[in-house]
Length: 176
Image (cartoon, rainbow, N blue to C red; front, side):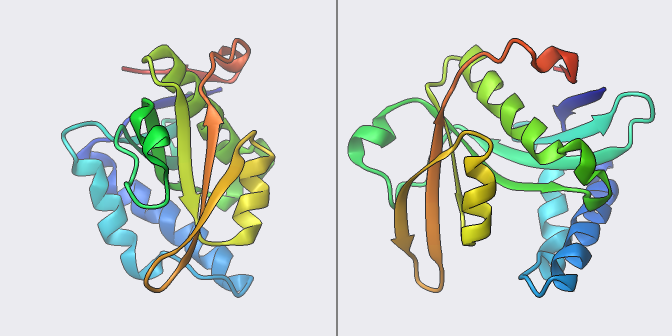
């Protein structure tokens, strides 16, 4: 069983350790990593608006993943109609590769879809820069809607309709 809760400043070192573990996993596969921005990303735990969330083991409290949830979709790449719809936007979702068999990334995504529905949002959106992540997010029910060329990156923009997921509480508890 896992618990998801808002991150605190005290979580930053453990979040950074997860980011570095994921970075090593990515580097072993020749993929780009967050190694050079791990400290800055972990520092998002200090946001007082509660936008970063951590996934922890219920029994130990060990942090196994994190995500950042914003209620503002980046304005580039989305239509005016899409931007007018209430949506949560996920970014910096990172999980400890040691927990891969338990699919913590999928659990975080499903929590986000459920959380968005319960808080009156219509959509959950996210972006990524790698085709392999597009495929992975599609397994979580996200649909590729747009591809945008930014200054230095090709970005894939995805969305999933928010919905209450009734079976989620068998695997996850949300702490306020």
